[in-house]
Amino acid sequence: MLKLHFQSFIGPQVVSIASGDSFDLLSALKDPQIQLIYQHKNIDNDAEAGLHFSLKPEYLVKSNKIREFFLFNDGVVVFWGLDQRSQILRLLRKYINNPYDSKLVEEEIESMSFLITNEDETCIKNDRFLINIQKHETEFNSSKSILERYAFSHGMATSVKIAIWESQLSERAEILAITTKALSEGYIPWKRKEVLKLIGYFSDLRHSINLNCDLLSTDFYWENEHLENFYDQAIKHFMVRKRMRLLNNRLDYCEDLVKLIDGMLAHRHASTLEWMIIILIVIEVIFDILHFFENSFYEKLLKRIDSSDRYDK
Image 1 (cartoon, rainbow, N blue to C red):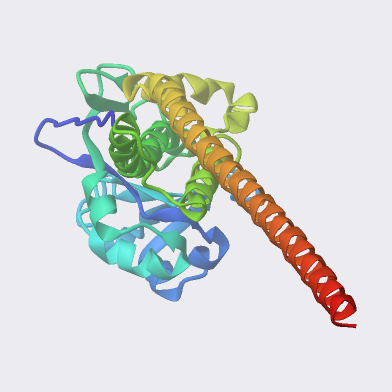
Image 2: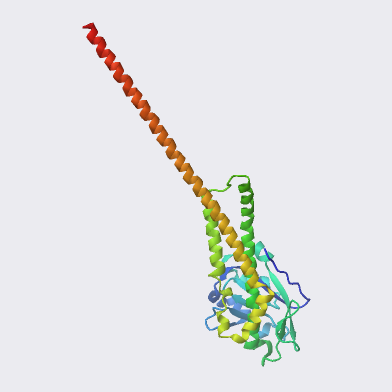
């Protein structure tokens, strides 16, 4: 598995956490405990792209600090400058569909520092997000500034989601490694049902990766071209496209191997049926032969009895 570590300068952090397959965004939006402390904005009109939550002014110790998180439909939360991550995740837990194992979630957390600057353009530089907010009228609370951070968060959220898939695939690939060793020794250690389960698992994973993940969609940037540069920077920094190619290549290999084993098992099953049919035919022939000799024996016996009766007369 290709795992990225970005460790960072001391300072406020951007932390990306994948909690499950997806979030129920509309239900999370109505949570009274979240509404009490955080104010929200939709990233787009129908909240499909994600939700933005920031601390209400009365809870901010310093008004010039970024304290927010982005909630993505595909089960990922990206925190900016927030230390209350555990509390927020506890509140969000009930809105997760198919939550991941806690150990997996902790292992695949990604983080990178960010710096508010007046000099450089907003960009990624030296493993750090540089956020220039001077060009925005209301500084970091302006919609333009929030959307820039959303674009960075989108790329980082995609990266942590891929890390989850890489880990899930690696776990199954270990089973395949044991299987290939068994094949080299001349036997298949699986039953047909286990093979079918693996075929289903890999097909489901491929569907999730290529067809059922909104994070991989760039439709949002068709109408927001000014944000595409920030998204592309994050995608390149976290090597998302390269990792996606490697992930799909590994999936191809795993699927091909499992299908090969399935073919072997199917052939073995067919051969077993053929041998059973041959054995049944042989048994039937043996019974026919026995029946033939039995009939011949009785015919001869009857003839002898008949001949004996005639002789006596």
